[in-house]
Image 1 (cartoon, each protein chain N blue to C red):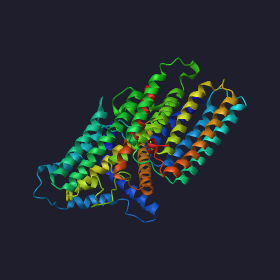
Image 2: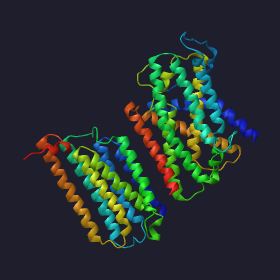
Image 3: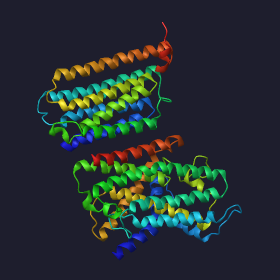
Image 4: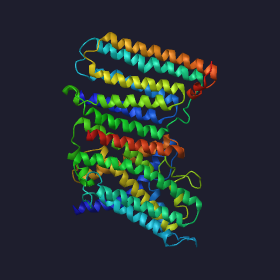
Length: 213
Length: 302
């Protein structure tokens, strides 16, 4: 059981690298959906999931992060008719290398944190740092607004992995609340994307800086 | 011990062209063709060694040194690679570094011979080959570092002995990562499809084939045989990590042959279902291989 969670986290980190290295927006959205599935499986492999609310939570995560939000993003992508991220601020290889560096630093850093002995052997902290940093890199270096939304989603996935440490004490209501917030947020962002596309005929967020009233 | 060494060397020398045959048969099967016979590579080699050579007047001794040094270096490298967990004929501490750089030496001479022809076309191929292999080398070395960390030794033969792989489930993840990374390196180093198409000639996008365009006859035969030996030895590295069971005398040699056939079929399937990458994206894939094996190493160090 202990090994399985680590495998899931390793897969999560590999998906991070892939997401940093691919230029097609469709692939990046699919990768974030895969991350949603992985996140939904993770709580099952933590200790003490006998409580009834945790399987429910897993189902909710898979449904929202793995299916609902990606389908929303796909719809947004079709509406704005953008397929590729061309020439990001930081190239694909440098951003992959930066993500790898972040993973290494996360591993080093998490060895120095005062964790519970229960959590010591898990890769939860490094995986979470790596995912947060991946989301951050995507948010800051990509030009297209839709990739930035995916970056935000990946960043939130990282925070969720971090929250696995608090699984036992985290109330059901709070988790569901966070998921709902995220869903509404992506929903609103999808609508905003459409409006940006209509108003400026481009999703390049750099052009938004020259906004005038 | 001596028997094993004899089997090792004869397998490297005589079995390796069969791998090309298996790959081509697999590709033909997937495409629904009959394809060349399984032993086509042997026939090609026999034909080439009986032919004469055409030498350009602009070339120097370097042009002939290229194929020779290339062949000898691959053969020397194959002596330190354990085939199927049997101890290699040559094993010493640090032979993984010997392996990597003796292969690099052969590549240096092949590239120099290509430059020696004075053709700008061949120079382009040499530049590509050298720059791609510089991306592939870190992936190979991170894998070596992971294995060295796991087995506490710097000798390839001791690294892949079965007992070093009897490790906890969390170590297996990094072995899988190294295997995938090395498979990508194998495809790149042997100029297989996502990186280079072994079937095309006279195209502006090719990498390895363009360097040997001016060689003919026995020199080309040496190059072909060297390439097939290189495929065998890189494949042995990948398969040793992928299938960690103990050596058990002669039966293990048959296991090894089966493993290599499996690998050849796998390469054939990859070649059938993938198109060649655009040159721009080749470094991306190689850097991902580096990241995979580096990640595998880091997981072990933690």
